[in-house]
Amino acid sequence: MMRLPPFRFHAPETLEEAAAILADKGSDAMILAGGTDLLPNMKRGQHTPKHLLTLRRISSLRDVRNGSGLSIGAGLTLTQLLSNQTIRKDYTALWQAAKVVATPQLRNMATLGGNICLDTRCNFYDQSKEWRKAINYCLKKDGDTCWVATSSKTCLAVSSTDTAPALVALGARIRLVSSAGERVIRLEDFYNNDGLDYLNRRADEILSEVILEPVSGWKSTYWKLRRRGSFDFPVLAVAVAVKFTDDGTVEDARIVLGAVASMPMLSTDAAEFLIGKKIDDEVIRETGRIAAKIARPVNNTDLDPPWRKKVIPEFIRYALREVRGDDISSLRQRVAHQSRS
Amino acid sequence: MNTHVIELIVNGDLREVAVRPNLTLLQLLRDHLRLTGTKHGCGTGDCGACTVLLDGRPVNSCLTLAVEARNRTITTIEGISTSGTTLHPVQQAFVEKGAVQCGYCTPGMIMSSVHLLRTNPDPTESEIRHAIGGNICRCTGYTKIIEAIETAARAKKGSGQ
Image (cartoon, rainbow over all chains, first blue to last red; front, side, top):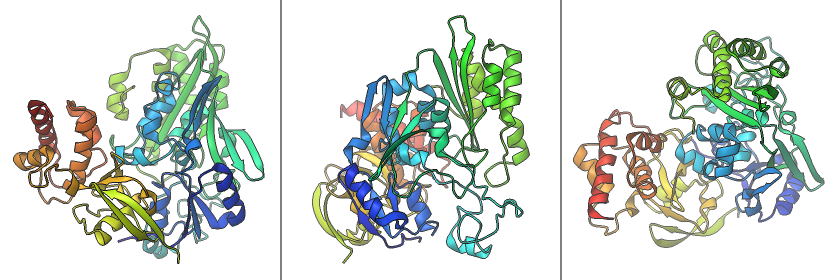
């Protein structure tokens, strides 16, 4: 039986108190949100923090505020997020993404902030300590070789968050709070394409909220490829948000691919191609081809990489057909094991 | 020492326990409170054998720190029967429909089912499948389990509970 290693536990009541503890402990401390990713990783010896700081007592981190757009507290559980009708109606891609994270139990525990900060994953990393020791560890933890591509200088572990691609497509910004002050950045700037150093987060910073812009004219959707419909990390995520003018011309677009690199990948080429056009079948075909170019699936997750690469443009096309207004709910159910809402 | 004294309500009883931070709720229930109905399966949140209700919602107790259960309400498989002598309708239906083979997943499966029928008394088959999506059974193929949950829903409706 895998047990948790020992640590000291801190349960601050306010964000200020939490920031002060982090400022004091630095990289010896890790933040505990829902714990559904961190605690299994700690049991496998992937993380051994001296201090764990829970955010659960800080009720302000669960606030959802309507204003110009929407502000969502990072401590909201995914189940709480799913019960929010504004998110369901206006920020469809986020709602759909949250709906297909893990299982009912895990969604009751896991938070939005935790899913955004989810550790990158790899078949050579998400293993017991004994397993990893047998291969002399890997670049991400305790070793110096990336077993996915032994010549790689950087870690190729995969960004496996569902909500982040959706949020990047929706143009979300995040607030990071520390005792030195706070900053608001675009979510895509929070990530590096490096499986080891995948977050631009200082050790003393707390992700406190997600800020979404007003949605008038925008439509969004999220498609996820996985082996099982009940419970799996994505092996491909496609999040598409398109802003239409009244006559159906694309005014703005954001196409994001998840689980194909160490960060959610935003295809600016595909967006540039789409803008000013109407989404007909030929445009959909070509956009799928262009957007898929940013994906580099490697052999470190479930399903065969050449096949995964082959289906990427198809998934992008499904998403585009859906935002155009086609009813492809039966295809969604069959291919992605997912209902629209 | 690095120990926290916490109070929590387990199956209706107020308990005061001293816990180290790295003790999981599952370890607290099984090893300290001797409530061994809740099972340890994978330990990583994949199988659902350790499912309990925390403030009324199903969670994986193997991924919940005991210290985080402070001042909260826990219901385990031992606590779902109101009388203590008769089975809960979901338990009864599992027995009647033969929804138990090796039995290891059963307590977790039943906790997820109890929560489903509390929040959705008349679920469709699809809703049942989604509700037990976090509980893995390697024996039954799920057919009998789904039948049992449907039976329990009908029995609850019939009894007006």
